[in-house]
Amino acid sequence: MFLSACAVDRDIRAAARQQADASQVAAALAAASAVPDLPADCRVTERSGIGEGDRLDTALLKADAAAARANARIQRCAAWHDQIRRGEDE
Figure 1 (cartoon, rainbow, N blue to C red):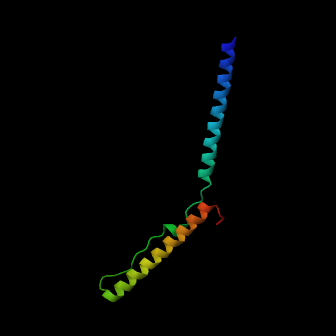
Figure 2 (figure 1 turned 135 degrees about the vertical axis):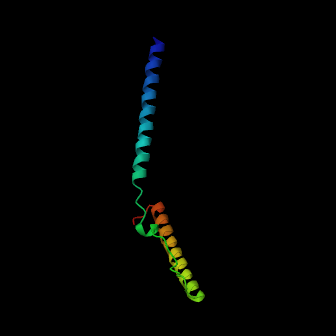
Figure 3 (figure 1 turned 90 degrees about the vertical axis):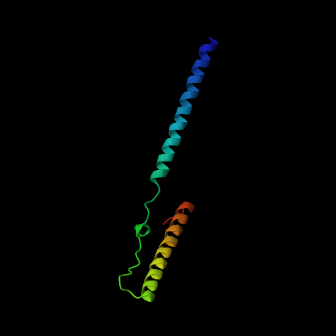
């Protein structure tokens, strides 16, 4: 008589554990789908635009401008990422 009562209690606890596990999985899936897409600007790549025959001073200016654009983009994307992690709206 006592043993059968323990089996029922064990089954109830197992079912409750399974329900809690399912709730955690559902919450994780919902959180993963809530992550916004990366802004298109963050996927753009830069090229220097240096061409054959460009003077060295011109080539240096073009390369420097491309690096500045890339660095500015990195800073914008990092700021966006930090904003999302803090939970702020876009």
